[in-house]
Amino acid sequence: MGSPNGGIIGVVNPTSFGKCTVTSVTASGPLTTQPGTRLVDALVVAGGGGGGGTGPGGNSVGAGGGAGGYRTSCSISVCGATAYPITVGAGGAADNSGTDTTFLSITSTGGGKAGSGNNSIASATGGSGGGGSGTTPAPGAGAAGNTPSVSPPQGNSGGTGAGTGGYVVGGGGGGSSAVGANSSGASAGNGGAGTTNTISGTSTIYAGGGGGGLDARGGGTAGTGGPGGGGNGSPTTGSAGTVNTGGGGGGSGFACGSPGPGGTGGSGIVIVKELNKASGSWPLSAQFRSRKQGTWVQTQCSVSVDYLVVAGGGGGGGNSGGAGGAGGYLTSFPGGTKITLTGYGPVSFPVVVGAGGAGTNFTARGVAGSPSSFSTITSTGGGGGGSNNGAPTGGSGGSGGGGAVKGTGPYPNFGTGNSPPTSPSQGSNGGSGLDGYSGFFSSGGGGGASAIGGSVIPGGCGAVGGAGSANSISGSSVSYAGGGGGSSENGGTAGAGGAGGGGAGGGPGATPATAGTVNTGGGGGGGSQTGAAATGAAGGSGVVIIRAPGPASISASPGTNTVTTLPAPAGGCKVATFTVSGDLTIS
Image (cartoon, rainbow, N blue to C red):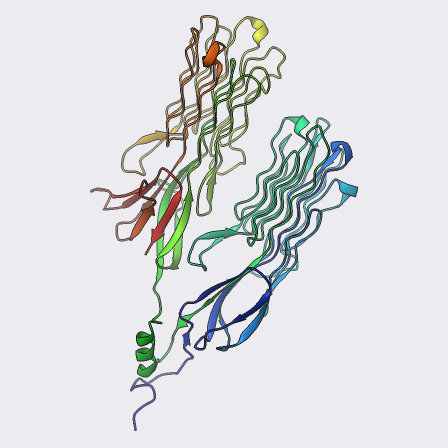
């Protein structure tokens, strides 16, 4: 009599023929498995916590809500053709925690509510903890994450709020892979980063914390939401967390008007992948049936890559305006820690290339550049240059913007670089402008990836932009992320842009400022004082470059992005260059 194992001797282990079916459950209800499914993988994300509101008169501002709990589990035993109940947690309204998400024995806890200025509401624990409100003299503390405790942890703690100079800022909500940032000076804390997961077939980030709110009268910046759906903080109404990511809501603030509410947390999600899997002995009849039905097990792809991620440069300020700061510069090449990409191929990973910020005239600071991102890496846009008649202080960012000419100060008036802080640093501070009452009208240079922007000394010349950094990840040495040059009047010389695409400042005789070079992240030059030349120039767009080993199979979309193979001695490495946002696909 023939063996039921087809002549193979060994332990008979259960097989699963789930056809690699992936189901994303965005609202509560049952999931019915395929008839042949015996094993599943699952991602379970709870609803994010709501952002904090602002107290009357702006005396206290809201923090960012904590992300919903993030949990995964592999090879869970199930039965085929069976309905399993799923509860998808809702995001918390302003000043409220998110609700839990459950599947089988897995429960992810809702994100903790943020600290709020409304009736002095304290932050709450949760999957990730809410940030602490901004109050004086005793700022609110962030709440603990991973509550109740599970292993691996489902989240992190929120950041602490602050009060400075009579004005207040909120802390960031915790994210699934990073704590929420504490407030710093006049700037609110950013939300903690979420976690990337490819169970759906596309690389997606979930469970980012919300950014803290601020009192705009302090001159700082609101906290940005953590990657993974965290809502941005605001001087008015906090932004909501993204639906079905579990992102925390952004905190609200105060901007010389009625106080606003915090943002709602993002709802949770459950994603279930029904596996094709066999181990031990596998009857030949089952192998034949799997082949015939097209349910043969897929191959898992894995490749470790180097990266260069440069954000968009900041725009220059106007009317003796400061220069824009360079976009944030983060890289693993050469010799740094690579990113390992995995998934059942082919699988795509989103790439975001940040735009350069616009230049401005007279009353507003130059527009900050937009961030660039790939996988878990996010580089922050460069800070805008200060403008003479409105916002003389340079903006913070990947690298800080330069300060404008201003008779009333404050001095120094440079923008802060490496904001939010990364290690290694993503950029440098900008330089300060010169007091207009001295008779000279010259502005500060924007910060660059490797050097601070120049500050003006008496003599009438605009300050130079900070130097960028050279990198040969593409196979050739190219400089990126140079700061813009400052403007000058009264016979002086405009400042040159920093090496790495920084634009030159505007000068006497209606000489206009020049824009940062596209796809370098260079800052825009500051505008001078005459006619159209008084407008600052735009920052250069960013770029993302990914370098994979020769045997890897990668592609880039859309078609404006390219993949090239390097000649010896680079060993045939493949380089994907993204000049616009798109997807990297491995197979």
